[in-house]
View 1 (cartoon, rainbow, N blue to C red):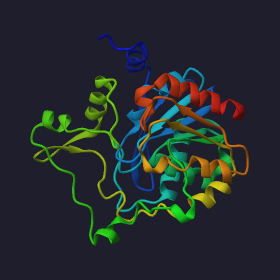
View 2 (view 1 turned 180 degrees about the horizontal axis):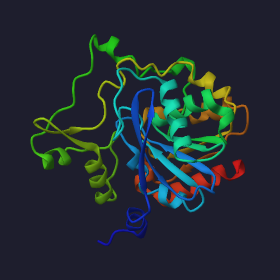
View 3 (view 1 turned 45 degrees about the vertical axis):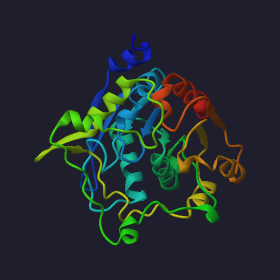
Length: 291
């Protein structure tokens, strides 16, 4: 079966990789597009990396100067002793500056990255055009579940990731979380390749398993959302099973403005891997009023 044109076109795009230091950690990112265009930064989810946006960023770059970040503890960025929403927000803004995204960039943030996008807008909202939450929602206080502070819950630190002696075995174990239909095996294979690192004794995953040991995401997410100093919007996957995406109706109800929302039909949590062109169109439509 011939690969779709969007896949081959994205892989042949003019992507430039770079790094910037933030609070003692090197933060990796990729950048596409002309600096004369409005800026946009793309944020991945937990245990993921910037290449989640590999088939979206080059097409957004027709209209935007686009950067995709590896948050600390992910991808090719360095790990930290402890993580916080405020530090992640500083990383996002540092990449915006280093990548020459210009004044008031747009944030597009998927899954756990939506928490980072929320923190970025909370701390720097007056410096942003807006934030698009991609399959991330904020829960009412009464229904909030804390995903962080896992060290205290477990009574100890996270276990290290498994080391595989054989690289092909490791690649074969790769899965999306939550799992979903694998429409394009070459996409999943590419993500798996970008998720592995060589260590003594073989291969293991790049993400820091201790990410949630001491990170507190916070019951006050809904309060921060209601008080944002920039506009926001939602993109949802119709068949998403991610628990963090279940509260769109709450966000629409408490938003201090009419909250734009687009559902991508017949997609799941990682919709940018299933329907990248629909994802591009949805992002462009939602941010158009902010330009």
